Length: 360
Image (cartoon, rainbow, N blue to C red; front, side, top):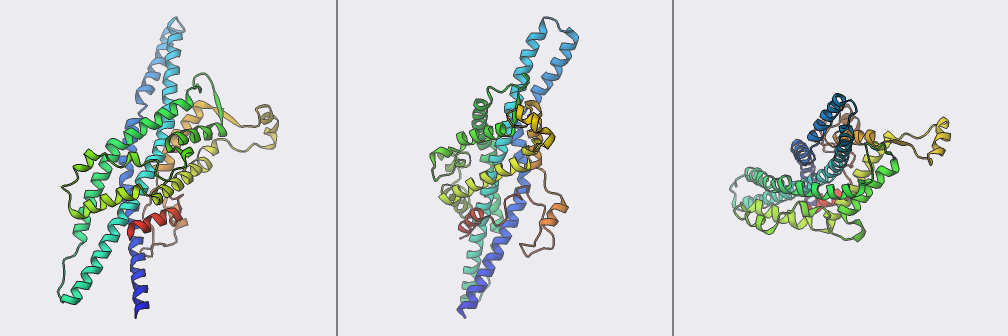
């Protein structure tokens, strides 16, 4: 009857969307090394670190001679460059991670939904013609590779360098009065204030618009899009639909929610641990320092460098995965190694809505 047919169709759709979540998770893990490499390339501090080592050796040789003042000035410049690049790397990683996570969610569900509709249409035609039709899974895989190659070639070759440049400029403005070599120390609120100010600059949060703040780093310009005409029809369809969805209020809402929860996670489970709550014995000292725990700026920068890797590139351990595993996909006894965005609930409403609209 109609009721059982509708229930069967809904179950099939739900199962396919579960599979799409698995595919997006696999693809996310595949992209992480490339993502990390692209961001590190744009925020490399190797030259600064090598020059600092050289300057320390030079100071020992000079024994505090006339050159020591110039060397110290140069060291200050190098440390401030490391400071700015480290914060730029952290914040760019948050933005790039969000871009990859959400665009994969859109594209994998677009492909999955299209394939399901084609299969259902073919089944209907087979019933009428009583002859088998070709399986569309090979064409799906081919188009999937084409779409991923086109999208992420632009993101990694053009989008991320532009994103690093924008974040770097905002970071330089925010941190220009903070001096590492001068012995500045910072509080938890200081670090959070840096993040929020850069976010205001990049995300244009004061404008309260309904469009994505990061879409400019994802969608290529008209000239680059014109080179995509030679693609097969399915890949062309997925890319066109991707661009439309990226400019939708639904995508913008999911992006804002993911960024908010990511920055909250980074603070609570990341750099806030560098500033533990004061004990009773610390109260008197805290009062003398305006009630805030403070740490040397150099130590905070080093901690944030490590936090970038721990938060975005280090997958959860097997024990952590199994502890939270509830078999939500109903397809296996153990989870796949997941991307380190597990702090975003798998059924987070904004992401689920985006997945649902993409699949339809």
